[in-house]
Image (cartoon, rainbow, N blue to C red; front, side, top):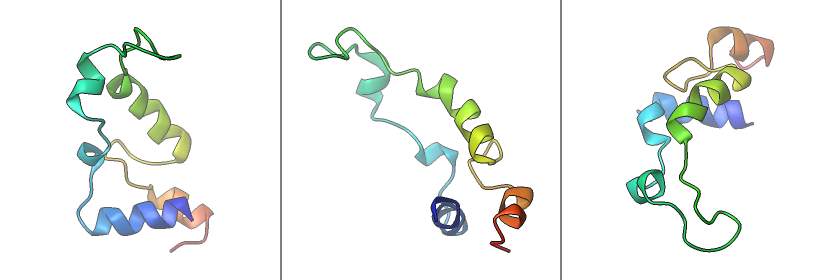
Length: 72
């Protein structure tokens, strides 16, 4: 279902640029809790996430992924 939802969102104009946290999360370390001192490395992690999902660098499911899941 997640790939179908992602495909729908891509067709509606959503791109990898929409897979972002607020800039504060990307630049300021957390100051409390288990994430204290941590700054998100989302930009570094997204390419590997997309690859694991079977998506291209734009964050869209590849044709191969859609065919494998019988969503075409």
